[in-house]
Length: 346
Image (tube, rainbow, N blue to C red; front, side, top):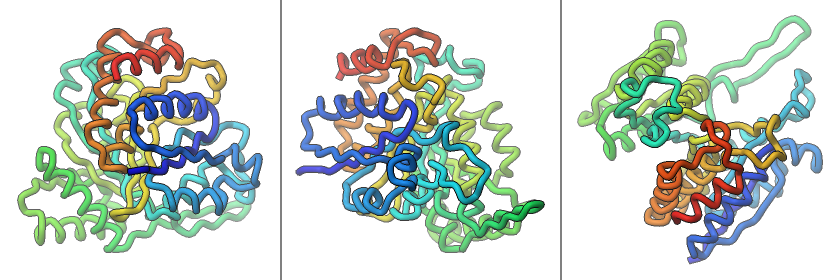
């Protein structure tokens, strides 16, 4: 069966890590068709918008989308009238109905020394951050005057229930524990969040252990006792912050993949957690491993191909066990050398 994958290399190191990922996927011998489109800052420069209607349509008609990175100082501005690369991300999520972002965090044994936390602290860590992706303050009404600005945070019960369901279902395939992260001692949206999550839990998921954690406490526990978490589920902004914090447990944000999913049958977007790293763009030293692992998530969650996904992950882990280290991991391997090391184990 043929599968169409839309490639969105984006900005900075994006094109540099996309090319070897395509080579990796082609090496698997699957019937894949790749279709590349401009996105982010590159699209702003060429088309005047971070996400064009044509690109969104192509993504909607694809089987999956592989996104590298967007953004950079060139497009930074406080002018609300100027387009920003990040608007493309929000538009893509909204346009494809991608309401659930999954970020698995499981430190790789070969990289235990690279983590900023002590080995005994990260030992046994295997968690999944599930972030609601299309609601909350990022999508709320915004106002701006010369002296005042506001961002409205809004959630509906239906939005909360569907992301909570994703978390409970994920927990059933893991250790059966969900930590629901909110700020219910202060925010009305969090009080609704907690109420809806508990109602769904009581009605359908009594077999799952549910714990409420305030977001500030969750941030503290992630760096003091990360192995205590199994599945964390939270709203958009809290999830944005906590998932990046969790990414540092692996020793480098250059190691973490993510999957953004919507309704069954809709194409998902798969991307590394890291940014466009404009400071090293064009130098050939970017770490492509998070992009490789994002491709593995694409194979598993986007195309339903478990064996090829596991093969990619195994090749990455074996290459690291053999000593592969890019610059962000304390080594000197180039992007090309890292790619070759993984391909050698595929």
